[in-house]
Length: 209
Image 1 (spheres, rainbow, N blue to C red):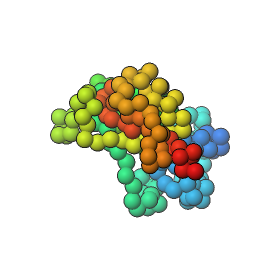
Image 2: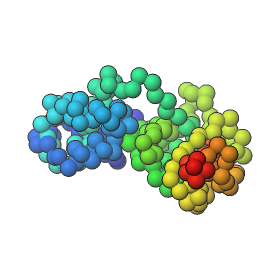
Image 3: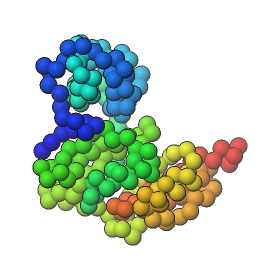
Image 4: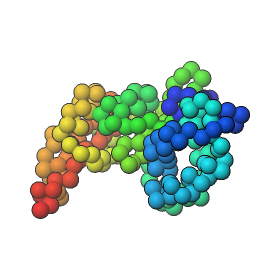
């Protein structure tokens, strides 16, 4: 089993020699906000990393080291947090769909020896989802492709019509066109290529007014 972050392998401590500040800021901006409240980033996390890491020789190693430290952040994670885990026939295809349709950022992935994705974490806006491949040891299976999934993911993004167009272009099937709903959202529904159903919405400020 192989763990990767941004396509690379874990860095070893022997590579750590000098802190690369621009890469550190990128790591904090792209990865850490999904794990801990934003108010703690500049204090607890920065202090922890600076105490554990003097720096890196070759800037790419710092991102590999960040993932080794995530276990140490458990004491400052929110006490309540819901993260959807999407079980898929082809997890790698779901990852690419989420990137193309929703602008998702891949935070980490775990792969089998044959290269199949077993598990991945993605960030969509400020939210986080997990993508998991079907495996014999888990009973969970991907939903049917007909839009009958009992779970609907309600996703808020700006520009709902454009997002739905991108989703369809990435392989989703349109179930409901975007309309202005009575509760103040402009919302439409798609089923993605792995059978997961998404309500894609933008707050309709004109309706709220």
